[in-house]
Length: 260
Image (cartoon, rainbow, N blue to C red; front, side, top):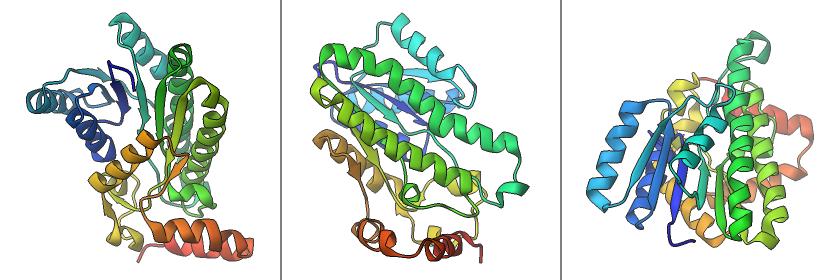
């Protein structure tokens, strides 16, 4: 990492993003905190600056709005903030049959989970390439390894994130820039409430946001391609699921998303 060691984190006001911000601040790094809620961001800024004597900058933006990524980049440029670490954490899901969900909700999900992540990566990777140094952490999901009936668009967006991250990592290898896809299973965050996933059994055994953030940050520091926070899930997704008939995989995947 560079001496300035400034990290930009999207979705920083809660959950995994908030824990990643704390980890980076503990290590003495400055931060650019991005989320929709300015009040929450300002409270986090005060906490981190007081506890760790770092600098934190706040950018309140809604990534579901087209053009948000460019506005974030322009604000960083205007304040001469050099981003050494980009953490694309913002994302959300939604439960239900695709044909019965609102199209605008699915479009917003694609904008946040894929488009904004891609745009931010494109804007900030230019400086990293020039400096021959930088790290990108994209928060994906174990959902990226199979189709997801009852969360069809969400699973597809995460498949994009995992694929894009690995391809970009290979392209940037000669530029000394690493890209890591963090693929956690169920996590205790506001994701369940926001996505209408109350009653889905797999969230009863969800891991803490802090433990997932620690796993992702360690993997990013090492420059790993893909990071899992659960060894059992990693084994199943890499060695069992690919060998099963596709229709059986779809049936199992749907059962995971059924509400009790």
